[in-house]
Image (cartoon, rainbow, N blue to C red; front, side, top):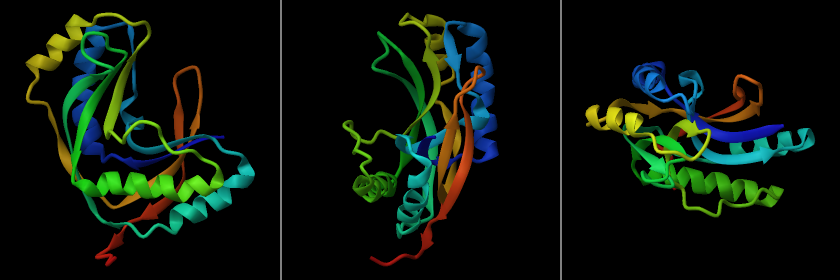
Length: 188
């Protein structure tokens, strides 16, 4: 099964993002847009995980003593790899160093299971669209510029989750496998 570790978004933030995505969807048909209900903050993409590795993966994630809760703000937008040659449209995430520390702890916990560390540095974001073919998307870029400053709100994350990603013709469908609450007032 395809799996990943992520933080879920509250419905209010999803609704704010959905309103922008409605504008963008009308401007660009060459973009495969994410469904607002499936947006999440990815901490670690695991990929294929054999069913017999699921209990140990869950145990390792449950053993993390993550101080929380985590304050996050969804603000700004950008493109991977860049605005001149966009392949991915993303929304930015602002947080303290705790979010990157959590991603590092997840990586460290899963490494003994043979799940390799990411080669790229952790860059928190929400992927809202992927270009079907590399192309200029001036209409989307103009809408994003006109909407500045883009601020979709802030929230406090109380947990992170292990998800299964099931591929379908309508896009990936995500199912929560396990939830892991942050530890309040955790002392190191």
